[in-house]
Length: 295
Image (cartoon, rainbow, N blue to C red; front, top):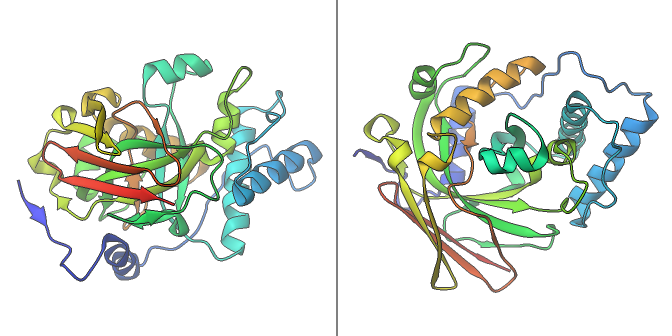
């Protein structure tokens, strides 16, 4: 196993920023045809509600308009990201959600969904992470892919994902379950950034080629107690598969994965609710560990 060192004085976030600069990644969002026009009052009202929930950390209730399609929901998400960019936030990557069959069955869909990762919600290993902007935060054990090359669909393959990946890292995703209960739909999840609340990135960068991620294990300690475990097989058979899906799905929106981005592939364990004062420590079989406290 080859470990790519970040150096003692550099956390992942600083390294990540350097790679963004060196690879010339542009902070842009590309949209193909979408169903959201500037004058569509229904979609604009739903966008307003999503943006308010994102900025205030309040639950998203009631649910979004039931007539929204998947295309509408992604249009709202992309427009949300544009609004956040206008206020100075920067896209640093993406997440894949609904990577378990149970989650997809619950929402009545047959594929995952994705969201954007913003620079203001990336935290270094061991950080004290504020929860004030999240309505109902939960932690997930995930594997993060750090890209060295652009990855475009359609037609992306696992081999191309491996070739485009600089390294994999242990990660904790903060999922904000601000939409839940009877009546929730996949469009609610998609429009709300696939419920992304933040991500804590481990400090060890591991060579993907040296590891078979379907057998990678993870154990979760919550305030010192073992509360969950899982393997990469839980994530669509192999955490590489959600990245393949993501590259191909984003092509539907004339978008793609860029060199320097971080992609989190989906949870290996059941989400664990956290509150201020809690601590989460996740240990992987070969990828090392990642931890966070919450305030």
